[in-house]
Length: 230
Image 1 (cartoon, rainbow, N blue to C red):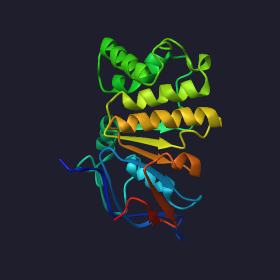
Image 2 (cartoon, one colour; image 1 turned 135 degrees about the horizontal axis):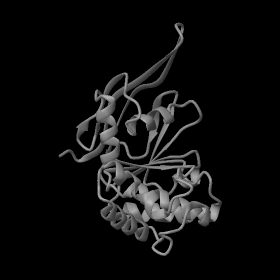
Image 3 (cartoon, rainbow, N blue to C red; image 1 turned 90 degrees about the vertical axis):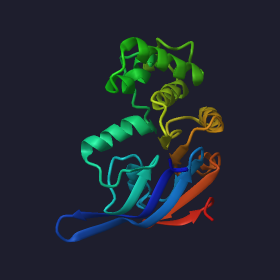
């Protein structure tokens, strides 16, 4: 098995808008992320960081180059295979939480396990264990509207963890939270990383990025700084 959770080699991504407009969103990007790293990806609007995040999340494929996720070359996989890899290898955390409104914390967290085919009993056991891990063992039956913003994001983090993914991908995870709650969520991320979790976080916030141990900066489709390179 590869030592790298993420191995990106000479990746480009080109979009064509109509017949005449070509957009080179990524222009020869290469980097590796070892298992257990905590990395922030930063860049201005239009820099390519969202395209890169979609690539890492197996939501899109490179135009050229290769991408290995947990040792698996996903560059040329079809849609069904990509969906299976996403379910098994990745945990997603979003700015907007993306929770089901009329559903308990336990059932929200267990949803990926439903798609993985686990029994209701096993789903609930694993979901409750993850909720306890993120400090919500006393909120298992609560619905999102009965939880604070920080608690909702903890539910989302528990859901991202429930499949024991190779990589956690967080997209502006504190974007909807106040500064005090943001600090609590960042402390939780640090605890998860200390426990061995690989975390990749896209953020525009320098203070949030400062919690990561490595920062990759993207501009005009290229990496212009990598504090972990070399």
